[in-house]
Amino acid sequence: MTESAPRSVKKSLPYTAKLLLFCGVAFLIIFLALRLWPSSSTVDSKCGNQNINDSRQDVKLFKSSKKVYRIETATTPSQQERGLSGRPCFPSDGALIFMYPYDDKIGIWMKNMSFAIDVLWLDKDKKIVSIEKDMQPSSYPAKIYKPSSDARYVIEFAIGNIDELGVKVGDSLQW
Image 1: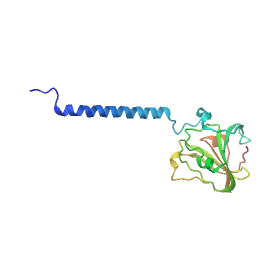
Image 2: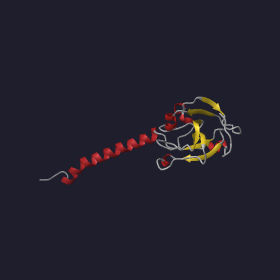
Image 3: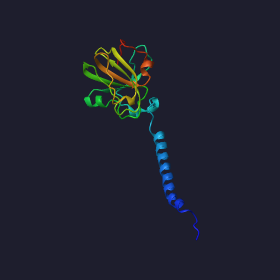
Image 4: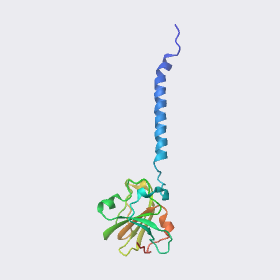
């Protein structure tokens, strides 16, 4: 009596086939995720209009800069809490301005963020009181960013915009 394959090989074939199928499906999921979902560096003009609810276009925020922005405002508590959370990207010409009715050390977190941002805090006269560049999504929940002094407005930008604007603490913005 002869067997065509050892018993241990016959038992391992279904397991091997299942393992190969599992690995193939896992590879396909990872491949599709990398192709379809933007990485944390996807913050540019290719982001598109769907990721900004602009209320004003072509706004020059700093008099000595040539760059113009599409402005979105956050005036209600729910808009301010949400901020840019949950969006896959933010266009390089976008600016989200948080407008508060009072001065305070307004904290910004990176909850549910998928990209890094630059942030400016401004006082009631729209003078910059604090700057934070390259705020990373991985900083949440450990870090809440706060200004060095009281602010009335907060502006969130795509990463690199503060350097591009050429602003510093003490400069005044307009909109």
